[in-house]
Image 1 (cartoon, helix red, strand yellow):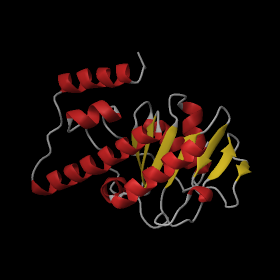
Image 2 (image 1 turned 90 degrees about the vertical axis):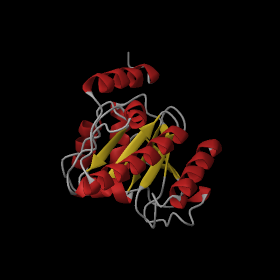
Image 3 (image 1 turned 45 degrees about the horizontal axis):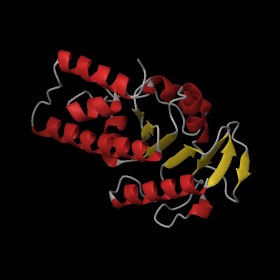
Length: 212
């Protein structure tokens, strides 16, 4: 369990350094056993978070270890783990560029080979639901599908991975290519990949993640 805590703290520091995670917004979690998760606490400033600030909960959301209250978005994490047994780590942030897309309810189309292979294709926007609710969790599970990322309507984004490191990489990729897309729309017309390339890269994504 201590290794999982260290991995989450390491990811938090990296996300803070890139201004993807800031102030008290967002949350991270990772599986730490068959029936338990490590999740970030509610209302903790990420610039000063420590291992002891992380909370251990079971799959019903009951606190097993920790003095603080777990993230209000715990229902979202639990719903994704339930739907996606391949997922072992989840990161939700209010990263600026994905947030721009989320508040305009625009999906992120497959504009790059790298992001299509890593994230699975078009990144959809969930239907708006109130933060911290089961309805939001259900909406995001639907928009996420079998991809590694989703935009959350008016509330940022989420990425998943088989490891904390993979979820982190996916978040960085999502944040950067969201920026590319928004800037491309300002300066010209973004061109998505041709259909044949998208299909080929989706197959690569499926094989890489063992979906076929």
